[in-house]
Image (cartoon, rainbow, N blue to C red; front, side, top):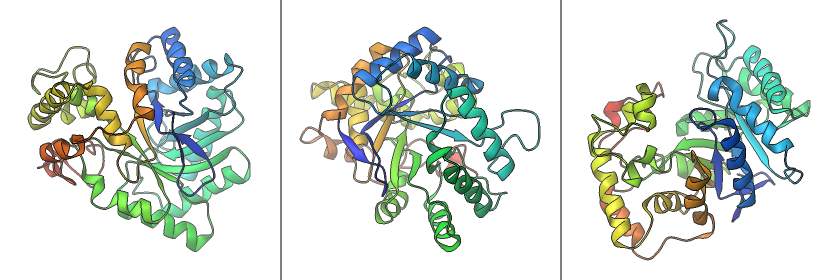
Length: 335
């Protein structure tokens, strides 16, 4: 598995990362542990989670899985804070109160003395960035956090974060985690160039576009029964658009005609884009993991990049994976 530098830090992470939103939802605990162990065996060295996944229980399962391994010391665990973890007004967001409390809670569930990469799950436009970065800076100085990052942020917000860190002498983000796949290429316009210029690694979630690029959907109105769109609805269902399904099926047909597995090719396409550090894959089973891990040491076959550009031009989108962001709406997802 190819290992890449994480932003301008000295840390290196695998070109494929293991996403864990499916742990316990729906993947059972025993299968989740086998999945984590199989990912480590395949050379994956970055596990990404959040304190909101399965109500925090995903962190507990990850900690248990790593303790069962005697050779997991080199694995980097990334987790996140932001979404509500309780009914209180300060049990959410990116305030100092929540950041410090959430970190201790995540450490307890993970059973670790530090978090390798601590990320704001979403920007909090009601909290000053220097307050959030100041809390993160304290956590780094205390040894509870090694590196910090952000997630699903626009380019201007990443740049504001960097400027705030430089002006106030606070810890600086080493990574931004954004949605990126062939159906939503908008980060190519500003975010990827900005991150490349300023040494910020980019971790990409949903490289398979919730399975649309694997040809899993026949229509946006009636998503497949075991898909997130069908089971969770809401923001997940909104991401499955008619144009996305049509384009995803065209991509799957193109992959099959060229003799490639569509899901693997979708992950590979993301991993090979300039400025990308890791593509975060979120398999539900060991079988799905084994289908995707070869992408970690492959390069794009000849002609595939051009065929993908013909389906969705660079910088364009036919589905919106930023639909939880306050500065973008579904209306912005146009070809």
